[in-house]
Length: 177
Image (cartoon, rainbow, N blue to C red):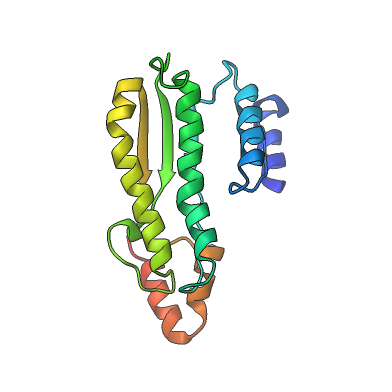
């Protein structure tokens, strides 16, 4: 909420919309998606950024990790693509963009407490983006996955800082370019 208010002060109330919801709750997501589209001047947002990621220790919260990291972004992309293409019946009238946050774990397992379920979910998401490339070209939208090699010091990596050895390993990734 703080960031939304800062952005509204900077860019004006009519230029900023903040919506908070659980991306794994598809009913709430549908409402948020429509609110965002209604806020847009032409009824469809120009850019969809899918930036979700959670992790847990191995065999803890497996379904939640897969739902958040893989299923929800796929669902989000499906909603957006159907909206911009009139349910795949026509090209988008202007080039739209989907940006997905993947991970280095999409290409190489990262053994710093992220866990194989996180790695698998991000790998699946990156492959989903690759698989959409022909559809994107045909229907006039772009889709890209950003797969950072470095880590950002967020709640996602807090489990990595339990022991001194963990801290050293995590710091190597935090400081790697």
